[in-house]
Amino acid sequence: MKKPDEGYIKFNLNWKQKSFEFSDQYFLYINSFRQKLFEISLIGAYSNGIGFGNLSIRNKLNSFIISGSATGNFAQLYEEHYALVQEFNIIKNSISCLGLTKASSESLSHAAIYESNVNINAVIHIHHKGMWKKHLNDLPTTSKNAEFGTPEIALEIQKLANKKSGIIIMGGHPEGIISYGKTLNEALEILLKYL
Image 1 (tube, rainbow, N blue to C red):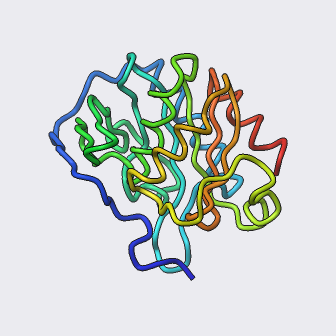
Image 2 (image 1 turned 180 degrees about the horizontal axis):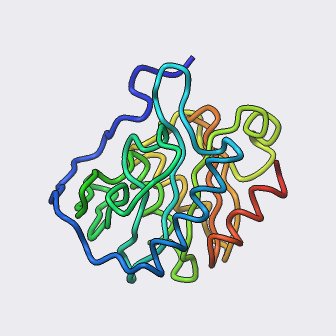
């Protein structure tokens, strides 16, 4: 059973509710991978309606486009279902974003990876109970005391995301797994390797 706060934004959010410059090329790229992840149930929603999973691509040095909060329920996403994270501060637990939807509740986790390594251009966060249980403490794993959407888990992730690509099991976020790489294809291939 999911915790009552699962899927909810825990950071301080500065959200400007307006569209951002989102090229067709970027949209088609990120959305095609989101569709694949949805079709194989690595992004989706639980029976109680709470959505899970998200993905992002780097836009500029410390800026990225991410699927929006509570979009796991949707079989198909459109431009308005994505947000542009313009600024973030892990220590202050804050995100500034632009878009017609709020940035994902996992935005700080994505931010931590982008900030830790300039070679990373794509991050995927999924839920998979079997994979999580199998690889907990076997693959790089965050502390079980660090909950999703908090500065604590973002700092843990930042310490572990020191390669050009990889996978992280979220110890304090049951079922939560993050993969990252130079491209979304690389990040997805890493997930499928361990799936």
